[in-house]
Length: 495
Image (tube, rainbow, N blue to C red; front, side, top):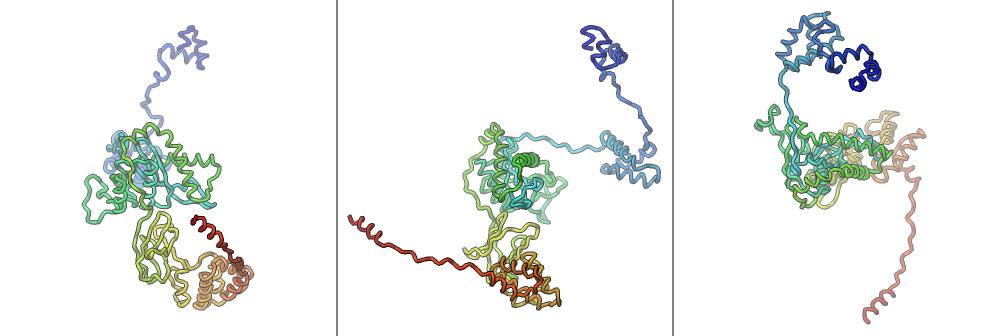
C-alpha cells in the first residue's frame, strides 16, 4: 500500500511486497491489511468425537472440578468400551481446558506486593549440588543459605551442610555483618531450622486457612532474632510464593555461580573455605549494581551494634553405659571413662565438640543424615577385647571396621573354620593394636598379609608393624648458655 501511494503501479508494488498481483489487487480493493481481513473461525474442521457423551463429562466436572482429563477419559473408556482411542486424550484435554476457562470455578488470585526499603529480609536454603563443585576431588554435597533484601535485591550466600538452626544462625550473621545494618523483620519459610510442629492441642489459626495451625518458632531462633533486634515472621504454611523474592534469587544466583565456574574452568577447590570465598566474590559483583536502591534501604535500617554470636548451640548430654551420648537425633561415642558423666556439647553447623569441665573430650565432624551416627572403635575396644562374645550382635558392629582392609581381614579370619567367638577375639586384638599404635601401620600390615595370602593374625600384624621400625629421635646436643651476657646487662644497669 505504501508502494501504491508512491507510484500507483500495482504490479511493481506486488513484486516489492513479495506477493502475487491478484492477491495484491484484493487487498487494495478492500482497503484493509491482511490481518484485518482474517475472520475468526466458527466452524470445525472435523467432528467432535466427544459430542455424544460431553454432557456426561460436564456433569462430572461440575460435581468434581478437580478431575483431570486423563481421569475423565478413563471413566469414559470404562463406561463405553471401545468407543474412544488413546490418541484422543489430547482432544479431551483441550475441551476440558476450554470448559474450565469458560465455566470453571474461580481460581485464587495472587497479589503482587510493593516492598518497602529496609523493612524486611528473606532467608532460604537452596541445594547447590547441581553446580558440581568438588573439594579435594570429591563431590561437595552442600546447601547455600541465601539472605536477600527484597527492595534492592542485595544478596549474600553462606555455604552450609544442612538446613539446621546452626546453619541459619551462621548464614544470618554473615549477611548482617557484611551489610552492617539490620532490617526490621526477618522472614523465613516454615523450615525446621526456625519453627517446629505445633502441639496437638494447639488451637487453629484462622489466618492460616486450610493449613489450620501456624508453626511456632524455636526458642533458640527467637533468641537469635532478639539478639539482633529483628522481628521474626514466616510465610503461611504451604505458601512458598510469600517468600518469592529469595526463591527467585536462589535460581538467579546459582546461574551466576555456574557462569563464574565456567570462566574459572575448574570446579575443584582445596577446601570449603576457598569455595566460600569464591561465592562471596560472585555475590559482591552481583551487589555492585544495587547501589542506589541499597543506599535507600540502608538509610531506613538501624546500625548493627551488637557482638557476633558464637556459631554453635550448646547442649548437655549424659554418657550412657554404651559409652555414647545422644545429641538431637544423632549418637556419638566418647571415651568410656566418662560413662555416667554429664558433658557440655557444642553443636556447630559442621562439627561437634564435647567438654567435661573445660577439657575437650571429643571433636568430630557431624555426619549427614536424619539419624547421624559416629562410633569410634578406640572408645570401646578395651571393653570389647575383654568381652569378645558381645561383638557378634553388637548394634554398632559395622562401625568397628575403620576401612575396607579391616573388613577383608575380619572375613579372612573367619573364612577357614568359621570360628565364632575365637575369630572375633583375633580380630578385636588386631583392632586393639590399631588403637594402641597407629591405625595406618596396622592397615598396611593387613593389606600386605591379604595380598600375600598369609594367615591374618594379631601376632603377624604386630611382627610386621615392629619390623617396619620407627625413626629414632634425633640426638640433640645440650645447648651452651653463656651467662656473661647477663653480667654485661647488669653492669649497664648499674651505671
